[in-house]
Length: 323
Image (cartoon, rainbow, N blue to C red):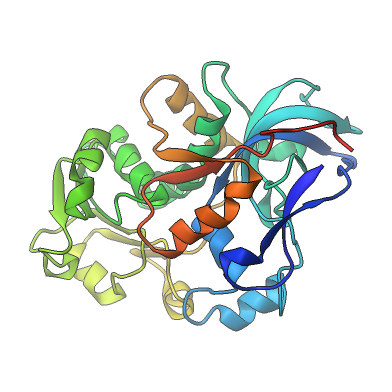
């Protein structure tokens, strides 16, 4: 089979497409024929070896000093169960599923192996590309907004970085939860975030987010340029500050009204998001770029910091016989 490979940290040109053996599932694992996979900011960080401030050393100790130990990137996918290993619960070959691979990565390939518990059934009416597009930003936004900050009807949410993968999900999910949404983005994305459910749009080039006079029940920073102190001021005396891209210091200090850290990968959340997608309540914002060969271009777009929505590849384009 074909798979992407990153052997050394560096530019998008470090990504190569190679022939590798098809992986075999072990007990409690499932092999997936990958139909679509998201390309995320997390993928770009793991390829470049660049991490939020303070995380460079611990990050490289965890994933590899000179290059990632898990050399086949990709963590978010939608596809078809191809083989099950031992006792793998409800799954059978032919089932259409979506999920995440965790730190084992491996989704930017024609086939990948995942834990049987890391999957959710994909509704028939949802396209594979759309399923892959919503999971990364959707799980992050759902965890922080609903499960951690308790956003609900009548609340007010500020989403900074509202046009990215996490931001577009945060705008939609905050609106679905019943909150009034103020979206911070560039003017060119005003129509997009309004269509997604934003009640007000702030152009950060005209109005710096730190200078806003309003107070919010939840301040969701999806890009990492709101300081802890500015976030607390915008949240007033009772609101929550969500630092989705926090440096090491803010992550360690996060407690009480300041929320940071990684969102868990839970199959229950995958199911909820896919059901919202099937019902037409959640929109899969993004673009399909092509097959595995499109990965360097996807990483270049992410590196600009101006990517809109999600980027998706289709590893099976031109798929031959597995081997």
